[in-house]
Length: 142
Image (cartoon, rainbow, N blue to C red; front, side, top):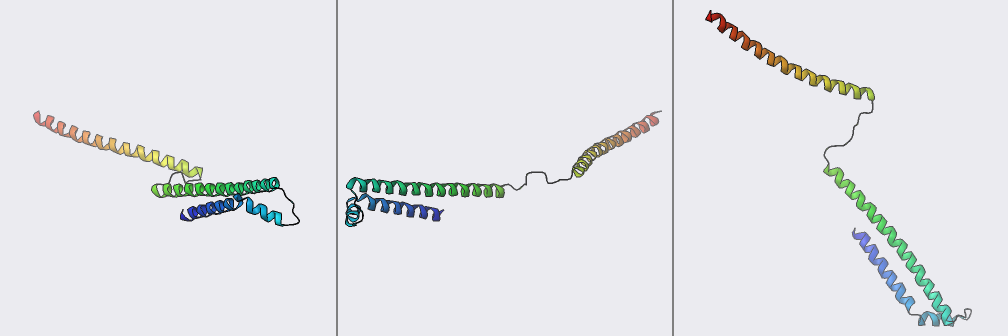
């Protein structure tokens, strides 16, 4: 993050410096007039300076868009990493063999029925023992 901020500050300084130099139209105009091969009027020099401004601003905008897009991507990756570390349980089903899926379903269903059957058997055993005790008591009463 600090590197990106530093890059953005450097770009801003370069842009300000570039615009600051090119805004001094008198100096570039004088330099262009000194060149004997170029015979530019003040209007031509102004138009040239405006084109320089447009080109520099376009490059600056392009670089800023790239940096912002890069920063957004990095932020998304950081969020994904954070979510991955926060979630202890992996989400999803890892089995890719359909037969294993069916076998797993049959096994879990059979285990549920088996557990219910064991509970019923235990209840019936208790009922039988209670019935035996009541029969013993009834026989004694005769």
